[in-house]
Length: 102
Image (cartoon, rainbow, N blue to C red):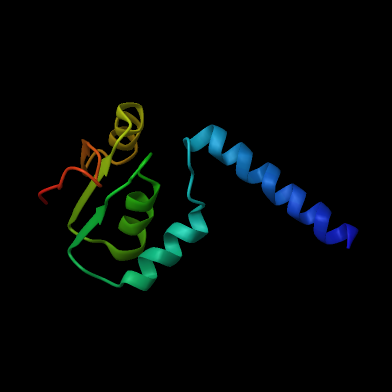
């Protein structure tokens, strides 16, 4: 039991470290790659709550889509996503309130 708790504690500490480095709510690389693979190839990718752009970044690596777009409510995160994915169209807005015409 102690091994599981220690392992869980280590994973939690790692997740907190990643969140501090990558954004308020960070989606781990493995999850981003899995989601990209599950959605399949296409020529357009939209992330309606893109944060720092990690999902868009890994979708590009996994799928090689031609067009990437993201919408994020936090202006600070939008700036980070634009730095991480300069070839993506990233806008500031609340996806639950404002439609993103892509």
